[in-house]
Image 1 (cartoon, rainbow, N blue to C red):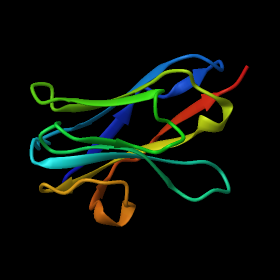
Image 2 (tube, one colour):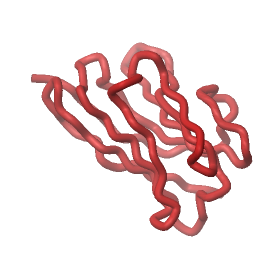
Image 3 (tube, rainbow, N blue to C red):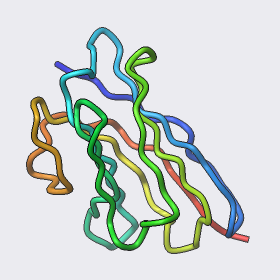
Image 4 (tube, rainbow, N blue to C red):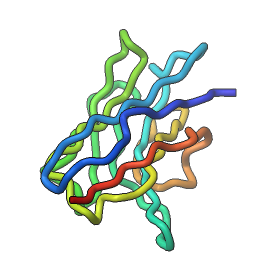
Length: 124
């Protein structure tokens, strides 16, 4: 089974930046679309960004457009989420998820494999 591992979370001040990473050991992610999702306490899980298996297509939630950038490095088997201009409302546990094939999008039910999550806290 594909095991995803997120890293890069932490505490940052408003306006700051973080880069999250998502990788898998023992599996190539080349054939998977990858999505980033987040869930804050008391709130529903929200799709943040996604990237196609080729890396040629991306999508973002309106709340993060212009601030977050998703990318993938096939050589490193890693997908990144660069987060700039962070706001307190970005505070959440961030998860990466994988969907095998050419489909990609922000519908969580389409993703089969999930990581354990990494905490992002934006606070002064």
